[in-house]
Amino acid sequence: MLHLYDTATRQVRELELREPGTVSIYLCGPTVYGPPHLGHGRATLVYDVLRRYLEWSGLSVRLASNITDIDDKIIDRADREGRPWQDITHKCETVWFDAMGKLGVARPTDVPHATEYVDQMVSMIGELVAIDRAYVTADGVYLSVESVADYGLLANQNLHDMLEGGGEREVFGAEHKRHPADFALWKLSKPGEPSWPSPWGDGRPGWHSECVVMSLDLLGEGFDLHCGGMDLMFPHHENERAQAVALGKKFANHWMHNGFVVDTEGEKMSKSLGNVANLLDLMEHYDPRAYRMLLLTSHYRGPVTVTQKNIDDSVKNLATLDSFAARTAGVAAAAADADVVAKFRERMDDDLDTAAALALLFDTVRRTNIALDGGTDAAPLVAAVHEICAAVGLVLNAGGDVPAEAAEKAAALDAARAAKDFAAADALRAELQADGWTVETTKDGTKLRR
RNA sequence: GGCGACGUGGCCGAGUGGCUGAGGCAAAGGACUGCAAAUCCUUCCACCCGGGUUCGAUCCCCGGCGUCGCCUCCA
Image (cartoon, rainbow, N blue to C red; front, side, top):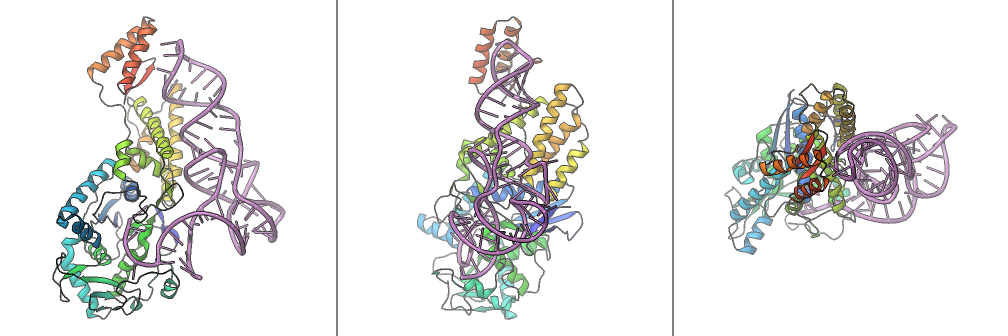
């Protein structure tokens, strides 16, 4: 069974399932106010690999991932551009799922929108106020973090240390809050802002309240795994958890956090730094599979640098696999080599060691080629390669359909070679390559793919 | 100030108390090929610094240096 690093206990431990055979996962999704960047792509890819691996293992996965469609940043942009905020959220969500589709990220089983859950958020906040864990101020409702015994569990810091130093930081709502770390559950709206009714006045929910309500509603108490980027560890996940704990509910059993995409200087790509590389640009210029390949070569918890060189390497890795797929397209189906599959499991179960899994994949490809060159039975190895690819979501391109025109040229090329008219053969090959085909002239005739 | 991560060859990037060092890319040579391509073989072979523990450390401990992250915008 899969072992994953758990942020709460700070150790790699088995992912225990609430219900055998089923995995419930909550992934914090995007706030839809701009195009997805490389960091979003990484997070969704990491958890897509996790999901596919679990499903490949025979488990049924319920993956809920929200869309935060009400937020200060959305309102700001709507104001700035003078258009309805819904216009922004709808458009951005379409772009988001379109991009994820291109990356080969399967759509989550549940996609809750924050705005669909406002009523439930209001009632949860009401409960927190009723049991005196939250309090009402002039600008909203706040959770009292001091009332949560183990607040700071995910941040691995106690409340006191957290407030030490930290630079000159503005504490939001400081004039009304009982403790500087208390956070807003409900923000009263200013005139003209989108708002929903509540017992405390018209307003909107705080970000941290959205995810706790949606995750508990869809997945129930004690769901298996909560994940997201490392930057969400604190305060977002800490605060989600604090609300659940304050309510006396069991929250996520296991916490998983992925590392950042960093720039060539090793600095995090951040919206505030303005060094965000756009995911859409990346996919426009490169095979979208290359990003998945790049991420698979590194560990999900470490930082990843995305450079031209990295991506180029990944494209070449894909070419090797595609070539393999084309070569083995005719190999009869067989049961996958049990030894390879067992090793693959072992590596993935060890905190998703995808780098080791890829090493195994390439080793298996090489062994298969040797078997094919030697004329021995390669079918189980071929099947194993396809199993691994399927489990991590790598879709191989075996060449696809060759249009009649290209097929004719390939046939003419073979004929020219048979007639030893190499000048004509080379000319035909050059033509095909100019059309974007990868031309492999083999003993069995010319093969085309692209 | 608190908490944490990282420092491996030309590049990317795993990993391990011992014959150290996955895999990919790049480079060189070779096999195959009319030539290429694809494939295979070979070569190139690195663990920030200083202490300590140990029979033995890149991996454990301590200290340093360097880089980065979080400490209420953030995947």
